[in-house]
Length: 100
Image (cartoon, rainbow, N blue to C red; front, side):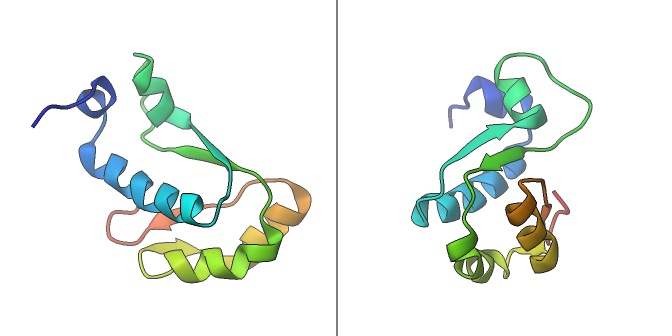
């Protein structure tokens, strides 16, 4: 198996977790960008924190669908998500099995 530079510098399991989430975003046509230490690692600047910051276009009208599609794999506070979407701030999505 051949690994990309990002996979070599980052935990492959974490990449797979982000992929689950981005597949849902893609499926709902929610525009996003990945940042945080995961994106930083791609450019060769490994950081101590191990996270992925995902910035999304607002998606209030399909928020319920988003939650139902991720709730088996991820913890999400629907209240925090709705407040963040309304106020253009952040909320957390945490993988249940790994806390990533």
